[in-house]
Structure formats: C-alpha cells, structure tokens
Image (cartoon, rainbow over all chains, first blue to last red; front, side, top):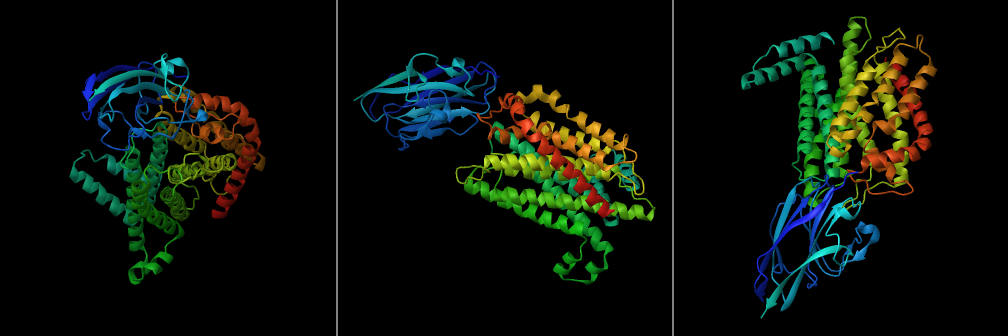
Length: 163
Length: 398
C-alpha cells in the first residue's frame, strides 16, 4: 500500500495587518514527502465568511496544481474525519480546495490567492493538506491542533483588519 | 504470409529514405495496391480500429488516474488517428470496388451502389460513417457537458461504429483470402490476416462490454452507470464468451478444409497480442500496478495450453476437446480483464471500497477469493458456448 506524506511547507502572508477594503495575499506551498498520492488536496478555508460568491472577496492569483480548484459554498455536503462522503457533514463556511491527481513523490505545488476582508477585526484562514486514499495519521497535515468543520486538523493563520 | 504481403513488405522495406517524396510514393503505392486488391483497405481498417480501441483503453486509465483532461488529450489523438486510418482504408476499399465492379461505373445512384456492395464492404462503410459522425458529436458533447462518462451517446456511436467496421474488415479479409485461395484449390486463411482481423474485433467488443458494465458513466448531468448486479452478470457472461469465441475462432480459421488439424501458434499469438495491448494501455500506464506485471503475463499459460490441446493433442478433434478448450478460456476472463474488471465486481462486494489507482491491485487480489468461486461455473459454460457458436459460424462460412 502506498503511503503519501502530505505537508504544507510554507505559508506566506503579504501582511499581518490591512486596512478595511484593502486586499492581502496568501501563498501556500505544499509537498508530498511519501509515495505518490492518488489525490492530494490543499484546503484553504475562511471561517469569518459566509459566502465567497462575490468575486471581489477571494481571487486566485495563480496556482500550478494539475486540476481546476473547487470552491465549496456554505451549506454544501462535504466529507469529514478524513473519510470522505461516507461520513458526510455540511460546510459551515466556504473554502477552496486545490488538488493534484496524481501527486507524485516530492512534487511541489503552490497557490496564491488574494483576499479582501469585509469586516474589521481578526480575519482567520485555516489551511490543511490531505492525501487520498487516507490510510493513517501521516495521510494528513497537520496531525495535531485545532479542528475545522470537517473535524480535521488545520493550521491557523490570521490578519488583523483595521478601520 | 500470402504473396501479396511478401511483395508488399519487400518493396516497402527497400525504401530507405523517409523524406516527403518517399512518403508520397508510398501512398501512391498503397493506392495502386488497393486498386488491385481490397485486402490492403481491409487491413488498414482493422489496424485503424486497433489503434482507436487501444487508445480508448488508455483513455479510460487516463481518466482513472485523472490527469488533466481536455478533448485534445494524447489518448484522444490516438483514437482519432485510428479513425482517420479507418477512413483511409475504407476509401481504398471503395476504389478497388469501383475499379472492379461494372455496377459502380454505370449506375449513378449512390443508394444502388451501396446496396450492391458486398456485405463486408457495407459493414465497413456503415461503421466508418458512424465513426466520422461520432467525432464532432463527441466534441460537442464534451463542450456542452464537460467530461463525459464511459457510456455516453457519442461514445456509443464511436464504439459501435468501430465494432461494425472491424467485423466488416475481418469478413472482407477472410472472404477475399478464400476467393484467392479457391483459385489455388486451398482453403487455408493466411495466419497473419486472421490475427490482424480478429484482434481489433476482440478489443472493441471487450470495450463495448466494459462500457455497459463499468461504473464510470455517472456525470454531473447524466447518471448512466449500470445497475451493479446487472453489470456483474453482463461481465460474467459476456467476457468469457468473447474470450473463448475469439481465441477459438482464431484457431478454427486456421483449420484447413478436409483436415482436422489446425495450426499451432495463431491462438497463442492472438492471446499474446491482447495481453500486450492490455498491459501497455491499462497496467503500465498506472505506476501502482507495475509489480503485478508478472501476474498478468501468466495469462499466457492457459492460452498456450489450449493451443497445444487443440493443435497437438486432439487428433482426431472431438467436441469434448473443444468444450475443454472453451471452459479453460472462459474461466480465465477474470485474470485477463485485470485491472478494469476490479471496478465492476467491487460494486457488488459486501464491503465495497473506493478503487483508488493505488489500491486497485490489493482490492483485486482480495476480491478473487470472494468472486471467483461464484463466477467460474457460468464463465466455463459461456466459454463452451463460445466454441460451439464459433464452430457453427466458421463451418457455415466455409
């Protein structure tokens, strides 16, 4: 059985604080340090948002993933606990899934998105990577920490949005 | 190899250069050859279908691995290059008919011309028309509905067109070869023509069976996946039949009239080519299946064994020997159609799981224990049926 080892190798935020109405960029780089994965997903979610329908809020600046990214809206049926739709739940906030299929050993993929927050305060971004088929705890990154609406571990990043 | 082939290939191999002039000369040579003998056209039709069908198998694997896909993918290029070859072969075949038939010269009504075509040519033309119409249909379907499933209207037209063309080409080669040999008071069919003609039929009919049994046809817009139980029943009955029918026919066609002994090797070569094609298009294209290559190559053992039984051990040949051959050939289909067949039977397992490309072999080898005891008897029965129908059809033809 092949064992992929997904990892988020780098997350670059263009600013730690932005004035309301101004965008900031986030660049995520991910790697697979194990065997070739059938699919590896990098998920970037936005718990402060209820919708990303307005194209001004989230813009994909560039990416080199070999599949078209998928936007998931609040309320859509999604998988949980690394089990896919066999343990379905409902998305509580929107997110973007970047993925490559297959994701070969040591292959690096990255994506840069522009975000324009709508409200003052702390704008939070969750980031995680998951390889499929999901065999065990090394099939996801991070392996500990905070869990998102899918009950899967995420790294937390934030930007302070001021008046 | 018949004399036409010997002279044809000898002349071609003497052309050392690969410049445009020699290519044009080669095409003119093909053209001239086709005017004198329709077999060249039939061979091109068969080879075109073989390229298309093999590319189709590669396309399925490509979709499973889900590499970036547009209509203009390498497997699609192979598929439509094959279609172009089929059309070229059809044109050559018609040129021969036009130059050799009085009807075509005097009758300007196309329908009359079509009605008077010999059956093999009719089948090739009907198939070629379906292929030509399937191209734009497929492109339009992709444009309207994005990625289509395996079973879609455009894919059905394409695959059925290829099946009809390949059957027409096979019949054309056999009847033309027999006509020539009747003049020489011999009824043997050229071994190379048997193999060239029968392999595309096998590959494309297998493709049709996959089309109605694999769970690859649900899309965002259409749910064309077959019922899992019905799909498993179709696979269990149709695959053993076609394996046995094709391989037994390849042997039976080599049996000379008035003698009971067929030629050893044709059945084995036909089986070996099928194995090589499936190996190249469905196994080598998925790196996770590389360790299973030796397992897959072992399929040649029962094929050669049946070849030996039929050609060496059965003099005089009896029906029982044919039935034993059919039972062996039918019973090996689960191994011969690895890895794609994993997806069909996984759907009816008690605990089905997602058949990821990296898990295909492990699911398959676990599945064998559960599935094989249930399917081996019906597989042997339809394998025997394949030999019975093959014998009847070929003897009727002779």
